[in-house]
Image 1: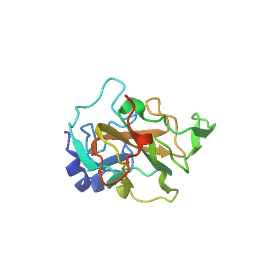
Image 2: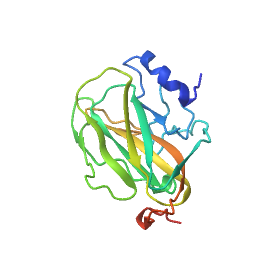
Image 3: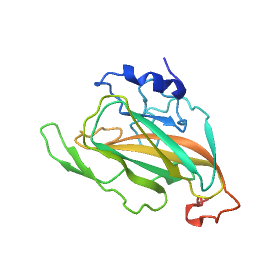
Image 4: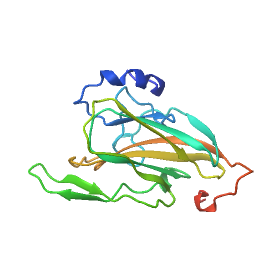
Length: 201
């Protein structure tokens, strides 16, 4: 059974700790139809599966350039780590997954740390978000507001990723899980434009 993201928040308390997924993008509405655990979310840049993507939601979130966009995710399975948010004219312009330092184990490499951009540049909006090492129950919600650049973009792609420490390598997604949302950004004429963020054609 597939559920619209609007229903996910009421269901996360039912997700067992050993569930295979790790986070669900609640706001803005993701590009793919997700199941109640947030899958599929492994392959970069926007989730999906190696054999194709789930049906699209066709959701487009309108927002005024220069304003704040509310970001809300639920972490369905605890892992130490952090989140990163990026914005590009399309999925092809999104950044690669974070560079990861690993340590060897009997089960293969495990992630230790990842490079965090302390002074983010396009296409990264914010990095090192919700950094955490303390265990919490399944279903923990993270949320914040992120400023959107003052640009015009009819179908920009917003990417939210979760990088995980102390995690084995996933063939589909490495040490990172991915979700995306489509934004229709209309520049605020009262604010200066931000050419560094203008999508490349």
